[in-house]
Length: 275
Ligand SMILES: C[S@@+](CC[C@H](N)C(=O)[O-])C[C@H]1O[C@@H](n2cnc3c(N)ncnc32)[C@H](O)[C@@H]1O
Image (cartoon, protein in one colour):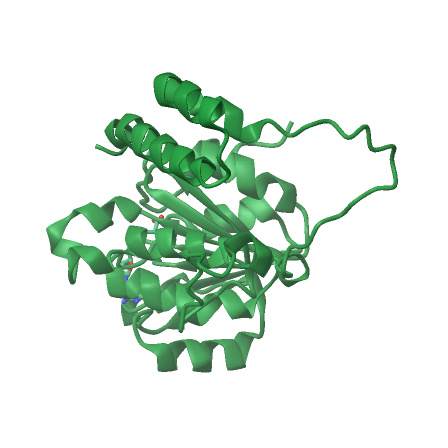
């Protein structure tokens, strides 16, 4: 059996410190790359504790690249491990970086962890990640720490929540209807990001351009039994009195009134799940 990523970190010659929950996330998302010819980038080299570990983990076919703002980190360059010095918050750094190295498969951001670092890295990197690859942003708990925040509402976690809307807006326009609440963001990454995964302190954006198309229905040619769709009936649970009254009156316009009462009653119930 192959040695696990946690064991590799434990026996690394150079100092490194990782939150314990991260190892399961690495296992879940990175194990399938072992032994493959991939380009893996880690932002944040520090004492060099992780770079060598990644090389051992992914194997001799892999290309491992470390990035740090600190010139001192050049010393960790060796055969099979490249080091680039630069500032992840600087968009110009990323342009030069990708011009030199080309597209990559996995980027792990363990750099400065400020909102600007994490957001600028995301917006400059996702379009340079190959399909099937991912951007892993670590230590996202900094979104809740004043020290790392520019403004709470501009935290990285809030940005990642916006990406959820961004991805959902690739649904077919019929989902949103004329009065729907679709806003096409001025700044969108939904051509590249296929899925977003939230863990405690880690967010992963998975990239696959071939799966980000506008969603449309797929209907098979099976037998239609004309079963009535009772979706809305279940939601009338909380207006039984009014419903009886309205159903007895049987005026078409009263159906809209019924919907109004359903919404009002159900909002009252749902509110407490958002506190
Ligand atoms: C948490 S340490 C990295 C630890 C390393 N990945 C490990 O597992 O051992 C963070 C590193 O990010 C670097 N860093 C901080 N801000 C940066 C920035 N804006 N751009 C690039 N690197 C940065 C720091 O110099 C530091 O070496």
